[in-house]
Length: 79
Image: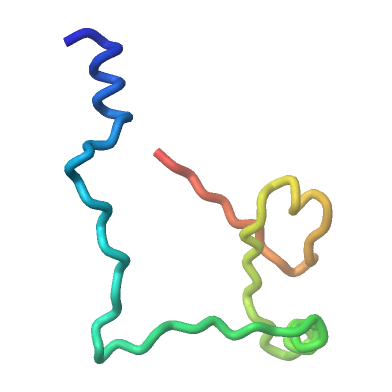
């Protein structure tokens, strides 16, 4: 099989395969929710005796535009 056919076979989905069903949670496992904070609530929390760890997960260009001084920049390395 030549390279073109191999690449085409890898990149072309099989017509007979059905897409996987969406993941579902077991009945006994509650759904995870992430609380949202207002700017004022975050400022109060950061000024407290035990401030929270803030991890900024935005894109690098967004970090360069503006970020909180107390925030840590996240770094993802894919291998």
